[in-house]
Length: 239
Length: 142
Image (cartoon, rainbow over all chains, first blue to last red; front, side, top):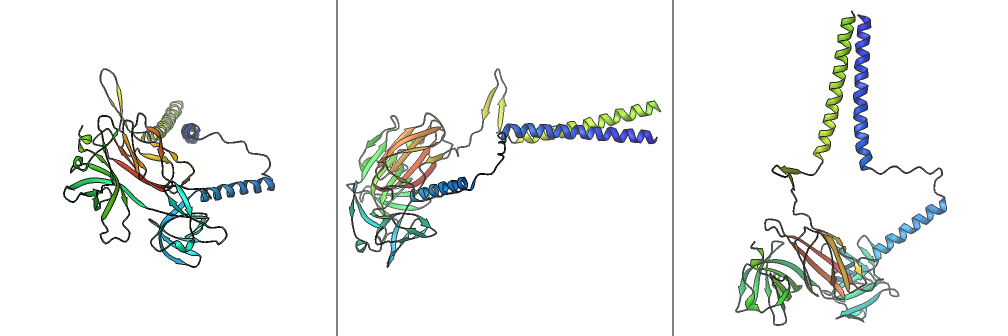
């Protein structure tokens, strides 16, 4: 009886060992297909000089990435050598250096040098330079114009006063004044080209992609003047 | 006695095999749950139909806030094949029919700030329209 019990126990252990072996070989096969083969470990650690070089290279890369980013916003205050800007989602503080910081105004395809004292509250600026928290060490500051760009559905076309009422994709209702100078284009649904059109070709229910002059300081906050509109006729969506 | 031993051995092995196969089956079941959803329609030939979500729009390049050095940038990304890509900014609009699920579209920008609105209109009318707005700067690099 004792021998029998020992035998049964040994067999159960053997079976358990077999099943565990089957499980581990399956999961390691899965792991082998997903992960790359491990690198062979180097016998010695990187030298201090090499470590310093690697750190320096990554720091330079980090600074280059920082320098490759621009920041923009409206001037809310100018105090000494600090210009506070209100961006879309963030407040920035551009730190001016009398020697380093350059000021330019964007005029068409070129830039024109200007002075700090020509900037006033409400101007729209682009600032480039390394950023630390809210502060930007301004290398170059550009005075520019901001446009509001988006799309939505036309809910009203007013042929008397030449404006559109649009339900925007971000759930706002805005009024877009179509001026004489507004560039108006329509998607040709057959050729998928952009055709120049008149105001009369715009219909309620069409989709509009718009570029609007920003209305900071305007009394009517939801009314804009259009620089350009691109209409996608509702027929495009009928399949 | 020998008969009893034999029976014990037999049941021991049988139990071990049952446990082993059960554990292997459970692991394989977990692996198959991680695979993409597919269903097969049986018929004269088996057609594999993959359910594709319309959340396939990904804009890889450029990143918002990026300073570019050239008047012409390349918008790179992924979207559903046969969609219509509409790109608009103050410098103009561009319409592209996507022949592939990846795109690389050259686009001219203006000097200064460029707020660019990109919309993907899928071929399937039941799919959602995807949109992105990015801001890039065509200015001198510091």
